[in-house]
Image (cartoon, rainbow, N blue to C red; front, side, top):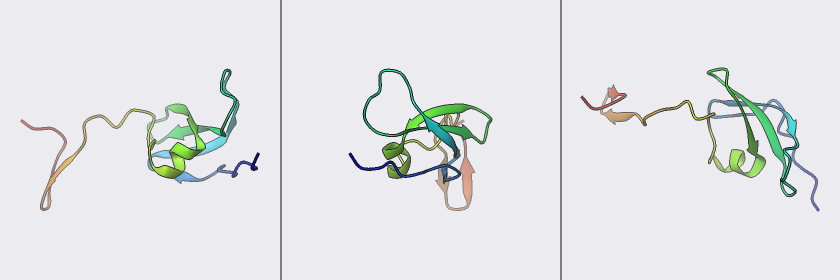
Length: 76
């Protein structure tokens, strides 16, 4: 089994990796405790961080739409 990559201190989107996590019931892969810019915390599998699949704790909300230099959070 390959050694886990130390992700401590790395930043992925809005998440900053705090430390390695060991959630119950998960045997394979490395999991990491991350803190979001909003203050929320979430445990994420390392592969999902590196692939860009998880970039926040879920606080992102609706995706932003961009038209040229205009940016809208939601359609009115």
